[in-house]
Length: 439
Image (cartoon, rainbow, N blue to C red; front, side):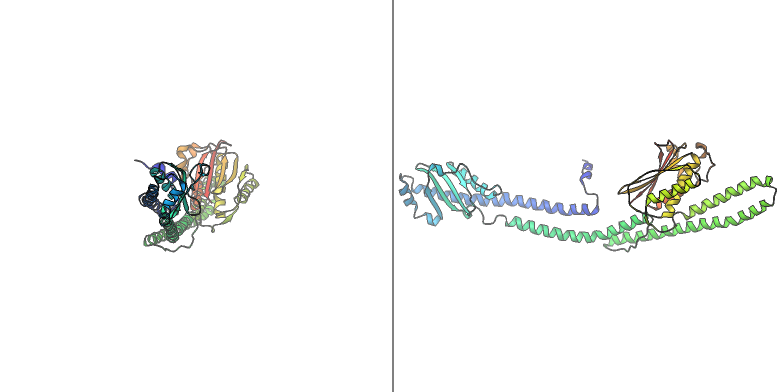
């Protein structure tokens, strides 16, 4: 039997699920105890007490069974009524109520009423007024009679005491348990916040605390974070060192080619320039997301600046829709480089580009669209890998790249905890590249 349909009704957070696990047994236990107490204990007591009172009424009635005068009947009952704490009087037909009077919440009164009517079929009305008494109206051979007695003779004095006490202490212990559970879950929340921040390229202070298992997970996270940071640092140093060391022989080659005939040196100079561009791209890739710390950034202002800079050098780039408002924690230099790479990529394979911003309360989307040939769906995963070149499938209007443009963008976006999505542009017909980052 599958219970997957229950998942949509279950809390998503650990605190909500823990609270449900804590509260459900308490509520079920209180309901079971309450129902069992009412059905198996309270009902039996009320029934027994009411039956005793009804038998006393029947016994008193039997003393005056053969009498025919009201006064004689009352005189015959007078000696025994004080001992039974009852009052009996004959009333007119118009005084008898049309129906029972019992508050809707009075479970005990309804149970006693049912017992009285079952044992006294000629009962016309049963009243439970607020003065703590019970009045029973019944037909006799001499006319309607009213029998009054204390309510405590048919119901317990405080039948709700057990339920009220149980509910009170149940709520009290639930509050105490919630406070304790909140303290136990706080280290898990801190660990989740630290992991989420590190996934978005921010390192926040964190130290293991809480239960033994949570401390072990926290220590493992710190070790993992340290290893990842060392790996990133080593990669950056390696690529930077290699790229920097290549500049010296390239410079010597340029100086040597400058001494040759211009016509003979032209092909070699093109190769050297290509190598120089490759080295510069390596340096850009090695820097990755290492530039600057996250800070509040206005995405609208950042995109406007990128578009203005592109227009200033003659690129046909326009500003699209800017929706939403507010600031997002970003590395401004890294994000600016990512958007510029997407714009350069759009202009390399297309003629026009458009940059837009879509912001919601949960996410930021920086979109770059072009009118180029786009990328086939089956090659989009390959396109964001380093050194991947899809030039044969695309129109190279302005020369190909070295296969690191989209890889650099993807590296920057992933360091911010986001995703680079490639698709088709509905507005311009080319490639649509979305940088999606959670807020």
